[in-house]
Length: 519
Image (cartoon, rainbow, N blue to C red; front, side, top):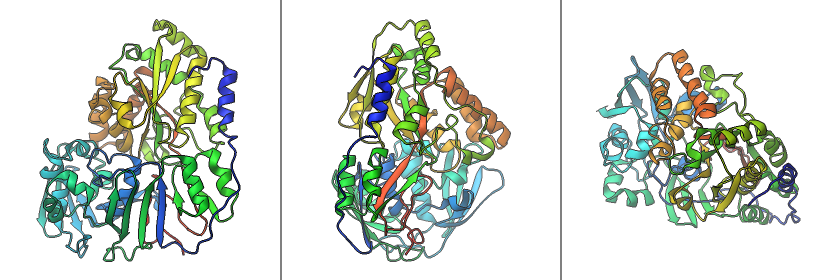
């Protein structure tokens, strides 16, 4: 798709907010005990270390299946709070001693002990290079060296280097505790991931690829009786179909609502919308290693400068989401730089950089699935139009799945997001762009200085040292050798029945534990 003028760019932005909708026809229902959730995608592998599970759609399901040792209390300043563990203690940020909660039951009735925790993080699942969860484990727990059971309810973790955020890492998606006996009985990792046994508020019942996943309440849940009897996650790819199903009473909750669908939902008093900004980031990625054009950082800087983020947010998103100051979030506390500018829009400078790089109008491919992220296709079209308006020859190629986006060479440009599952740049900035990330390991981009600074960010105990390293990494990310860019916060809007009194977490996940649903 080629759009060559600023006027056409603005037309394209405006058109996305003018889509018509029909009158609501929601069927009347009373109460929600068996929740039906429509999502844009489902992954039937239900282990947090499985490489197909490292996506937001998977995390939303896994949140009901798995509990972790600790959680982040976003209602009280992002503090660490006990979950399966009662306390964590360290004297040097190298050895961490964890005391477990007693009497916790897995879905199969077994008691959770230190042996299960040690196995979850140990060599057979995560720490050895031939372990099935090694790759994902290295992203989430890159410093972990050893874990052992000290007694029935005590576990000791050792890290390779001091890790100032290790306790927070235990709250992340790779930290879901599994039942050792059930895992070994399953025979292999893939078979286990299809029918896991964990200790979360809901237990696995059934999974059908590209169709649905069904869970039911874990009656012996340590945190009290879960508020729902069952949850059924259904795969409904098209956003309009999810909205239509909500209005028809087929679903109680739908994910990933675009702004052009708001009116169709809020027009019915029996429905409402929750959500908005999350701590995560909506991004685009550039492959600078498998094609000549994007190997020149000036071309990637030009791409960044060619995106009018404010126009996109004001028009497409109706101003309901924010543009962060680079890859930062205010929840990072002392590491956050409040006067760092938001990514600039400068078409003149972009054209100058293109000229300096010797760009002569060669085709640049922007690959997209189109309907994975909220308003993904509309944003893809808008960005392509903006880039074409400054003289870049950008063509959109819509793909059927993520394998086609990521595996077909050269990869060029693709949409992405960086999930932030605990409040620290190690959670998303390092895990998505760092030395152990799929981005670098997959051969998209590499920067030696960035990777050297990463060691300080993840290992220094002095917050001032961490801040200096982080801010220089952001300089590389934004200006010097950009591997991609932040577009805006990863906005997550959910349509739901108005009588279902629930809201998403700051991470955009779906938490249905006791206390999360008002009566």
